[in-house]
Length: 359
Image (cartoon, rainbow, N blue to C red; front, side, top):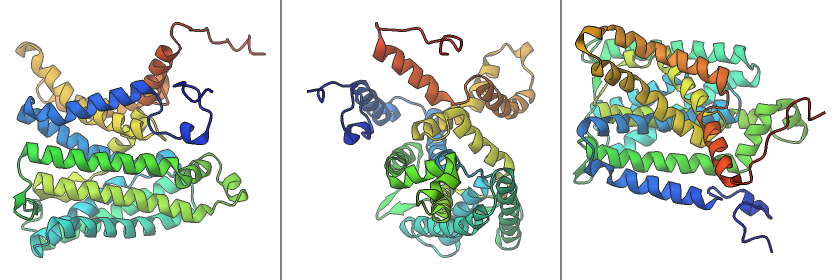
C-alpha cells in the first residue's frame, strides 16, 4: 500500500535505485539536455574548459573508488595518469596504433601497475600507505622522464600524439571532443554508481570503516584492496590516455605531485565516498583557477597584480581543502543533500535536538 509514495522505501530494490526521487530524475534529465545542446551556444573557450572537466571527472572517480570507498590513501594518482598518457603516446606515435588499440592497452598497463602498487596496501595503512604510493609516484615519474629524455624528440618537448580516428571519422576540434568525452565520462559515472551499489562497493565500505571487522565477516580484504587499486589505476590510465589525445602532446612535467594533490582536493571538496561528490569536486577544482583568472581580468588595470594571479590559483587549492575540512568535511554533496532534504520535508520542518536535549 505504500509502494506508490515517492520517499518511503518498502524494499531493498527501491532503496538501491540510482535516482529514487522524482525531482532527481527531472534534474538529471535537464542536465543531460543542457549538456547535449550546450556546444551550440557555448564559445570555444567554454568548450575547452568543459573538456578538461570531463577528463578530471574520469580521474577523480577513479581516485574516489580507491580513497573514498575503500579508504586507501594514495598520493600517486598522477603517476597512473602519466602511465596512461605515455603508453597511448608511444603506441600512437611510434607504432601507429589506432585509438581502439592504444586506449585499452593503456588501461591494461595501468591496471598491471596498479596491482603492483597495491601490494604494499596489504601490509600498510594510513600515512605509511600514503608514503609508499608517493615513493611509487617518484619511481614511475623517473622511469618516464628517462624515456622522454632518451627517446622523445627532446628532453622537454615531450611526445606528440596524432588525433584519434574511428574509421573515416577523426576526433578533432573542441566540439567533437566534447561529445566524445561527455559520452565516455557518463559511462564512467554509471560504472562507478553500479560498482559502488553492488557487493564490491559494500565490501570496500566495510574495509574502509573497519578492515578487521570486514575480515571477520568473511570479506577477502586483500583481494578487494587490490581490486580497488586496479580499478582506480585503470580509470586514471583511461583519463591520461584521453588527455594525451586531447592535448596532442605528452610531457612528463605535467604529472607532478601537485596534480595528485589536486585530485585529492577534488574528492575532498566534492565529498569522499560519493560518485556525485567526485563529479562535483572535479567540476569545482577544474574551473576554480579559471574563475580566479577571469576575476582578475575583470578588475581595473591599476588594481591587477600581474603574475600574482597565478600564485593565487595555486593557493586556492589548499585554501579550498582547508575551508571544506573546517566547515563542511563531507563536501559539496552534503550541501546538496541538506538542500534536498529541506525541500523534501517542507513545509513540515522540524528543529534538530541540541546535544543537551538528546540525553
